Image (cartoon, rainbow, N blue to C red; front, side):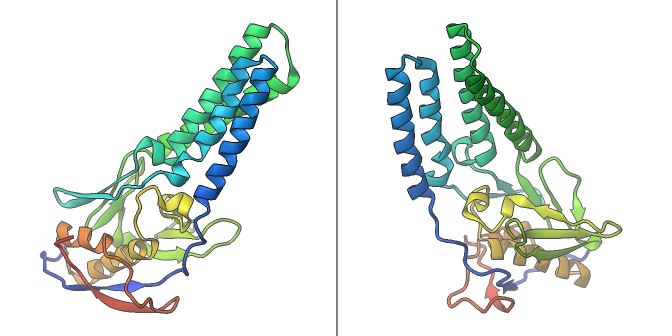
Length: 260
């Protein structure tokens, strides 16, 4: 590894066009209306525990409207990207919501003493979703750690820049994502927590193009023997998109401001 140097600019590339319009608030108000209607219906039918369904529906939209935080700190020689609080973090929040849904349907069946196939199906489905999102939460728990030599994702081994290729995996049947191609492994690692969608970028609240550009620049500097300081890496990740924006696929040199 080269000695630490003070770099002043880095290549900011526009890998993807602008994200779609944020429809989170509109969706959230829609499910609030449906939720209130369901609460009224279940209370009228004296299925009080099923009114939990009406409570859960509005809660599902909380991450879409929650105020996101951006917390990027320096710990030793690493830059640590901290995830959102639980109410703004999709996976753990959905785990709690579907767990609450499962509890409500299970208690209602226990109280009524009647096996209703529809309620049983809803209970099993919500329980399965709670387990699924719980596993997703476990696999993506904790922060992302980035240094001049490697990136370490939650629950995974460090991926060194010298053994990888950083690129943009364009949208197919799913959202476009940052792709880390490792040597001797034809299948790239898709960094889903940085997906170019409002629903995914909320995990760390960082600009998608800036993150890809930072990772790609660190790999380039690694090959050239240039070692930026952790403060410089942090400043790169927090760099706002340039104005005016370059065309998709084009790059510009932007300054690194360590005062961010």
